Amino acid sequence: MPNKRDETPDDSPTDLPCLEKLDSPTGSPPTASLSSLMELENCVSNLSLAHEIVVNRDFCFKPQSPLTDSLEGRVTEIVHRAFWDSLQEQLNSDPPNYSHAVVLLQEVKTMLQSLLLPRHNRLRSQLDEVLDMELIKQEVDHRALDLHSLAEYIINIMASLCAPVRDPEVRALRDIQHPVELLREIFRVLGMMKTDMINFTIQSLRPHLLQQAVHYERAKFQEIMEKHPASLDNTTAWLQAAASEEASAVRAQSDSPSPDSQGPVSATAVLNRAYMRLLHWDPQDQKYPETVLMDRARLDALAQQLQMLILEASVLLLTTAQCGGNASSLQGFVGKLRQSITTLLEGSHTREAELKGALLGLGETILQQVNEAVSSQGGATLPKESQDLLKGQLMDLWKHSNPVRTLIGERVQGFLQAMLQGGTAKRSPELLGPLRLVSTELTKVGTAFERLVHFNRTVFGPFYAPILRKLLFPPGEAEAGEDSR
Image 1 (cartoon, rainbow, N blue to C red):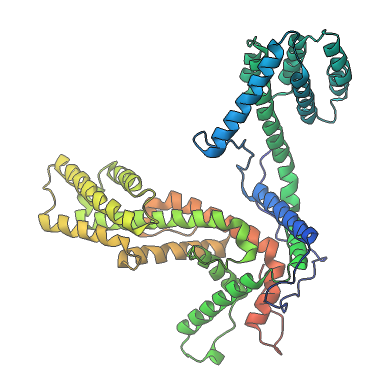
Image 2: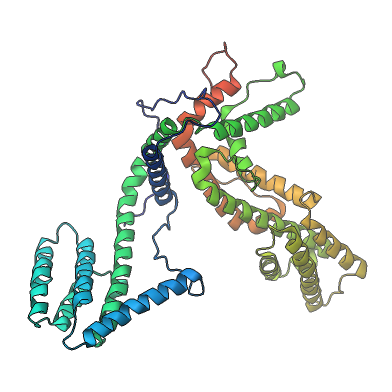
């Protein structure tokens, strides 16, 4: 499949949906019928699936199997074993009972038909002819069913339809002589082939979805709004908070504290600030903006990666400041130090209690590496006072209010804001100080964040515009303002 950029045209169609529903009551929605609730659920489900395919390049379906040690897994195993044992008893009876086998052959036929493409007319006709269920039932009645020949034909069809990655599994089927084991493996491999077909279809449709994604998601969200009038309440509160923060920031930079003397607040700046707030969202807060809800898991993951990078950069800054240039300038020292930091802090940066313990162990490891590096060059190890000071400074990083951690966090925030203002078409902003040591990872996270923001603004810009007009332009003023998209 040819590579396609995950960027969508920042156009504004003239046939926008009706968006002026911001004055809807914010209380509980009226009681809806079961059918309307199901329609709403289906609409949200379709929207979420299409959005996932568009923004996640690696999206694919995977077979879901219950854990073997779970109750569901044990029950599933018992039921499956009982079914195949029953089939074995039927085939071993005299005369053989093929009632279960005939049902399985019908299911196999149905699965094979689902793998056929529209151009497979000859193969479809052949499949109907060989797996003619009425004929098979007559052969069972006359004890003339050749199960082995049918299985061989099925395997040949599977070999012609499967993806190259499934060739080994299909070839292995030819070596199985036991009929029950053969049928079980045929079903297993057919299940994988069906998943392959679904993923192939997704990849084939993805370029077309990318072209239509903006209009599709916008239209689907409009349908949700029509069924659920309060669908923008959280989004309005989110933008309102960002607008208040931006207005305060503008006043702080102004010479006069009077609100009347300041220039108009930029809608683009409000949106950028709103998106930045999502990277510091309280996980317990349930009032997440509806227009970004489908990307919450992705944004939370990016936020955790950023916190990890902030900690890494903070540790590197403190370490290089204490050990001086002798050790930090050695070839491979910083790389080895980063590897130790990543390993020891991985998974602990989101829980304060675990972070304290991780930082304690990290201090000992870093001092050992610093002293070894200095000694290898014939230098003296760090004085006891410097070692104790460094360990104390590293331990203090568990606090969110730590000055070093705060400073690095502000620089990271400035870097991300610059990326949002510059866009993907411009060069990434320059990184200063210790952030250069994590530049590759930080740029990757920043690019992913900017791509999500760009797509969200393109899709939901028409929904944000009337909200921002009411927030930034009081009644009576001109509604002409900066385009939020």
